Length: 290
Image 1 (cartoon, rainbow, N blue to C red):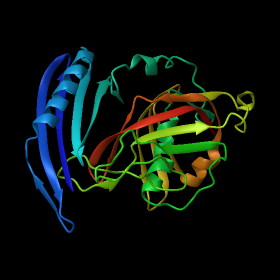
Image 2 (cartoon, helix red, strand yellow):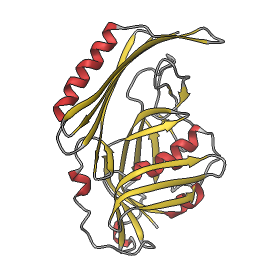
Image 3 (cartoon, helix red, strand yellow):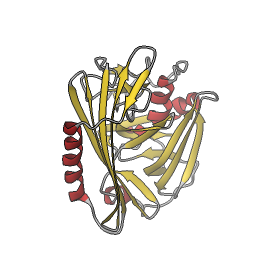
Image 4 (tube, one colour):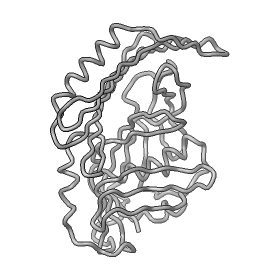
């Protein structure tokens, strides 16, 4: 099986481009080994260049922006992805608009031992780590709320190994897709597009949620340790400022009180595992934990 890819990466600071890199190559799977060559694929490079040209229209001053576009061919099918990481005042999101995430920052500050209201789809990051990464590592099951579902829903028909992709329930099985950052990397079983949903018929009533809330608007990062089963979430922006959550998956499952509304697209997650950085879609409703 032949895997070919190309990527274009640009760094913009205060509206000026300061770096631009192009990488390309082919990996040939020969069964017991993978042969990687730095081959130039004109079609894939063209797809990357077109995508970067569209991303450049979003470049603005007073921020640091990283533009990344990639394209790959597996079994003759060309697939592509493009994203922007925007950083301002120490806050970083995958996207171009910080204003929607900063809009709630002036709210009153309840104590840290209050319930936590995860806004803007940010609960997807919590469950990305606690459910998604645990599924990648085949962690033992945990008793999650019966009204909660977390699915990986690939946007591509096949993965980077040429296997047909499919939707999976991350609470019960690992992701179906093998992904790789570049032709030099070994494919790993990875999440692609996480959707957190709840059942309106069986979910808790929002009117009985505890108050006051600590409102979370922006997550700086997270991690899951398969040896200790501990999830760490670093909150970048909330009504009490930055703070860190460290809990086991069992503690996180027990802390979930309820959810409301339709899933919202969180600006995105750049997920790192074994040194490979990949963009993972993230969607979740507003959710409350204690």
